[in-house]
Length: 142
Length: 142
DNA sequence: CATTTGGTGGGGAAAAGTGGGTAATTAGTC
DNA sequence: GACTAATTACCCACTTTTCCCCACCAAATG
Image 1: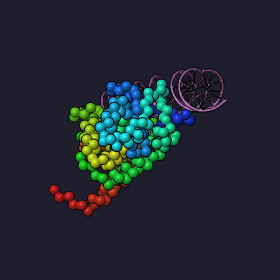
Image 2 (image 1 turned 90 degrees about the vertical axis):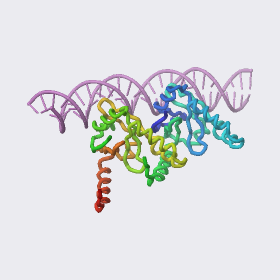
Image 3 (image 1 turned 135 degrees about the horizontal axis):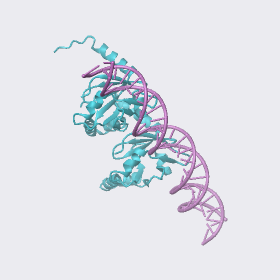
Image 4 (image 1 turned 45 degrees about the vertical axis):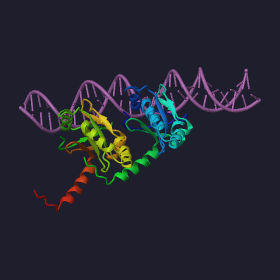
């Protein structure tokens, strides 16, 4: 389970620490410590999948109609990178990925349950504001 | 059941005691002692859910139409933090949450039945005044 | 008035994050 | 194919934050 928000700094070399809470989730619960990071196909952020979830995604894509499948492969499968964070818990993201999410110094990690998202802090803040505005008048009945 | 109002102070380190009355409710009545604290989506306060209620909320959100769901995930699910209060009954709230509720020193806890809210005392007072004004001319027939 | 319970402050140990240095690998060029 | 340059991986060290525990004070209880 990936839950919570964390901001870490990317250093000169392009390395960012994966929040410890997420690293723990990657190591427990039948996970193997590895993550696959790739583009979000419809959001200016990256998505990190533990191995099992990544396999699920691949299966889903595999069953898509031919053209859609091709697009997904190009956009999502191809740029994906597998990581085992180094001893300090950091990863070095490839240029393509950094650019897609427009990552600068302050990198924001957002847990979403089975996966987590990686945002540039500024983009995240903007996105969040949009969310808050959209929910402003929404009444939640429970 | 969470009822009553309590004000506690947040210390230099950002810790606040959960009122003992609420902690008791968290431990009795088939609860497991844990709370999940997150943003209120339309109010400048935080909401604390015992595990069971949190699951209910997750289920509700899961069944929402795609766009609404996405917003709720960003605003409510992602920033959520799970706590088992320490031996002194305190929790350390993440910055994101503290900011959303604009928490300063005096923190106000308000029981609302199945959950409870966490307010900055000043915001709470203001909100209460608005409530009183709105009900000023309302006659309650029973 | 004594005793318990709840809230608050602070200290110390551990963990997380960050920066930098060096070795190893890769890539590029002659 | 060998040499050089650049990139990447690995390791060490420092700083900051977080967590856990102890101790005190104040209020409530009997």
